[in-house]
Length: 187
Image 1 (cartoon, rainbow, N blue to C red):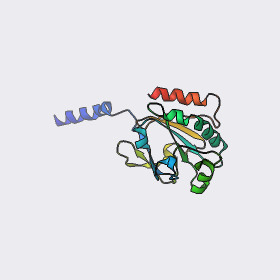
Image 2: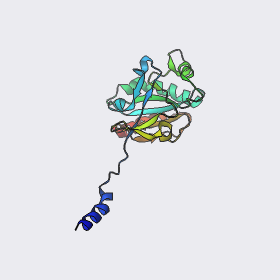
Image 3: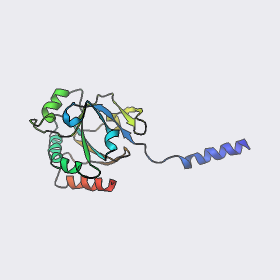
Image 4: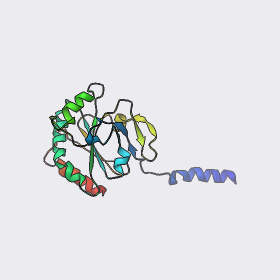
């Protein structure tokens, strides 16, 4: 009898497993500006407020600068929505660009490409975390996002799941509309 029960459990176990992807988040050091709201950014905390648009940036990346400038025009409007569409920029090349480089290019209103939302500075080793309990996973932040180039954008829903990824190096006349349409699908 125990054998039959064990066989049934083994056969049915695949039917009751969750098919949903577990959400993933990160907790990373920031530039520690007023815009960053502290020295550490928690994606999980931000997702409790609304979806997050992640922008991977590099100091020498002209597409990143164009995306930053275009997104800046909509940032305040998006933050006033319910729920807000939040942004975070992720420095992609920590081995080549340091905190001062990022701050000079993106960090202040006097910067060439001022970023009025949080900027995070991961190391190559910083782990992605499971959203439910923020346990560090075996993948780094960069590995989880597929070793993104720059610029690369990802729209993360409030469950920590990637729902959209950009496909263009430079923003075009439809880019903001596409992001807004993807956001509307989430709410």
